[in-house]
Amino acid sequence: MSMDVARAAEKRADTARKPLPEAWPLAGMHNSAVAPHAMVASNSALASGAGLEILRAGGNAIDAAVAMGFALAVAYPEAGNLGGGGYMLIRLNDGRSFALDYREVAPLAATHDMFLDAKGRVTERSQIGHLASGVPGSVAGLTAALARYGSMPLDKVMAPAIRLADSGFAVDSAFAESIQGNSERIAPFAGAALFMPNAKPPAIGSLFKQPALASTLRAIAANGPSAFYTGTIAGEIAAEMKRGGGIITKEDLARYSPVWHAPLTGTYRGYTLLVMPPSSSGGVTLLETLNILEQFPASPAGSVESYHLMAEALRRAFIDRNTKLGDPAFVQVPVTELTSKAYARDRAASINTKHATKTGTFGGVKTEGVNTTHYSVVDEHGNSVATTTTLNDLYGSGVYVAAAGIFLNDEMDDFSARPGVPNMFGLVQGEQNAIAPGKRMLSAMSPTMVIDPKGQLLMVIGSRGGPRIITSVTQVIVNVIDHRLSFTDAMSEPRIHHQAWPDELHYEPNGLAFATVDSLRVMGHAIEAAGFSPGGFVGRVIMVGRVDDGWEGVIDPRTSGGAAGY
Ligand code: DON
Image 1 (cartoon, rainbow, N blue to C red):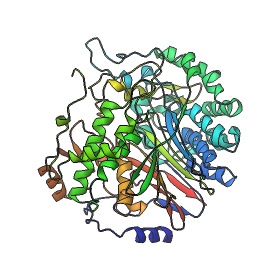
Image 2: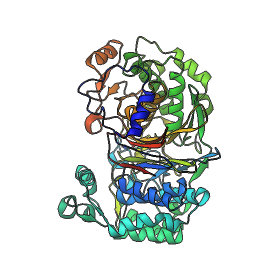
Image 3: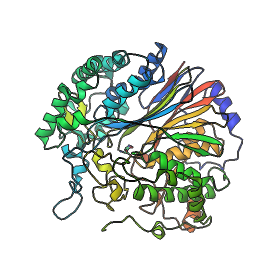
Image 4: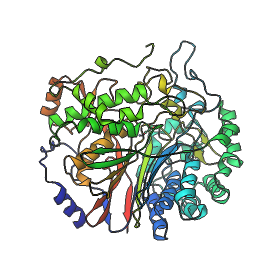
């Protein structure tokens, strides 16, 4: 731990924490950087290097974020992408803030029941292969952000990404393992030739070049987003779709456009939050959870009370998420009501502080019956950017447009393929999030900014992990505000997860003391060690936070990445 971090930790850690279980592996695993003026943090040290390069060359936070977005598409292809979508929050040094929705949309030929077989059962076509992809939004989003709030030309901010694709980068163990772990997804499609030569990941230490991706990036740098949406690349994507039985056409690509919104705002114990409005559920669900928690006094980190209240607040917020939220361009979404303090008081009143409330008592969804990446940037002028982007699964649908060097997403699985039937994250969602042509599928991505009571930017944060994005970001924020933990400790603190359906409380293995698990069970929680991701970890958070001496970039010890500043 650097001296700066040690000082920050000392200052914040003024609230008692129950001792961490001895077997908890992440205590003290601090992966952070501190610098006085500016900071970037992402899942790829190379992409963070691209962001730093642009900042040092005089770019602002938006220039750096766009550089990182394109660099992640090269150096972190499991989630960084041109073939997916995402969300960006921008806060300028004059206090103005903006939210950019560049989520994928369902193709024009998509239909409500397109993923059901003749017997009405959900098939895996929403997760793998050509039908799984929504129309990609990343290139439109990144270029729109740059055009409005950047200060540098597109070719300049794309230069580091083009260089990484052209000259290659050394394969490290994280990249090789990610390909190995997803070989079944990659192997059936055209990406196998490059990503699995000889049916194996490229050797660790070898140079990994992506010439097709380099020429795609060069075309975008020279001609802007039209190269992707109406030019050669659009033709290549449409041709791959036709070959594989997909439905995205040139018309779909030509019609795509990102949407600017005002960020949603909320408060939590005197702090202000800027969050993403729908089509992401992240912001609404995070604000509703925090508003409910605010109705109770903060209880010590690691205590049974704190886990119980967190689970009950999440349960209520996820019930609303899964039944009421969808793309606001298609369905009525009660955002103002769900994020109001009055509503939170009502929800909080239904919490029994000694006993779990079964999800079923609230009624059900009306029915018959993973990789993402976040990056944060703060520049020396006080501008900041929080971006989360995804292909959904690692390497998306597996489909690789070889001529363009890009993986396509499997974001269609974020819709309710059949209302009431769980998707790959076990999310049981309703008709509000049913498939319709041109509609955005509901997301959990939660790029978030926290402003302290003095009005200063405190945290620029986000995560990956499907619905666990919401629960992990919420818990890190609560660890900082309620538990006064340093940013690194707030990050390594064990997490829980509750998403209402299934009615289970998941905890990170070894993160909760046996007695705590037992107490929660006695209180009526169906408590289980978390599965779903390696190690049973909940979320992979990336953040930049204000410390006395400048900015601290923190990478969750549950993942790889790099933070850098000056
Ligand atoms: O938008 C969403 O909510 C999901 N497609 C995010 C997927 C994800 O985070 C997978 N990463 N581990």
